[in-house]
Length: 250
Ligand code: UDP
Image (cartoon, rainbow, N blue to C red; front, side):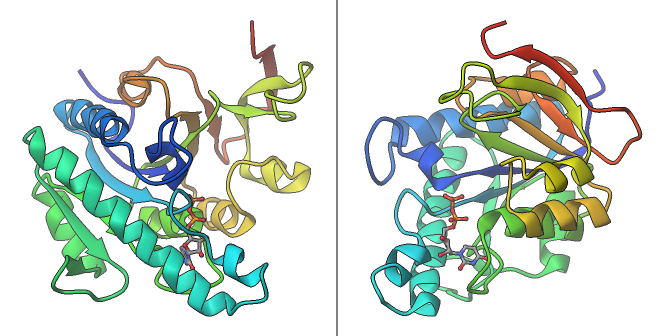
């Protein structure tokens, strides 16, 4: 079968790896994510992955206590490397060839990122895990995901979230929140829909990269969308009008 997209970047937050724990990494959850990525690979889809670090550390936590933001962000970027190494381990365990490329050099742990190296590994069919965010403080791993998607010429950026798409309000707090089937980047920015940070949305818009918002907790949800089904909201520049489709429980 022909998958809906040929080359994608998957962004998952660090929190998605901690399962029911309040902190750190739940290996069973990482294994499940790895299985979903393996499923996508089995369709022939080329996959890059960006994992956040919020399950371990966020730079703002230091800054909010009067500490140095830049150092805090360095610590946050290190957290993404820890998560990336965990994901590579889970992928390799099930026979999926995967490599970690870090935006910050740490050659004893993993290779350093370069666009050429990333392309080479993607073309070899390896899953490329982009660690260390953008390598710069004051950015997020959402921006890193949009950046890497642009650099490797991805057809789509998959943003795994807590819910199955984009809502007019937080569906966990507002029962009247309605789910969008399709929105465009402009509307996301204008209405401040909380999907990814503004820099990430703007980068995706400028490079005409659709963002597929879906639930990271839905087992095989990633593959289902690649197969043409599944539940998601598509954020794209296409002229199709935004459509409010249904409430969460519909
Ligand atoms: N970070 C950074 N630059 C980047 C990406 C991440 O400084 O390009 C730091 C920042 O401190 C951030 C932390 O790494 O809070 C973890 O990333 P993020 O908050 O995006 O993780 P997520 O919320 O997706 O788990």
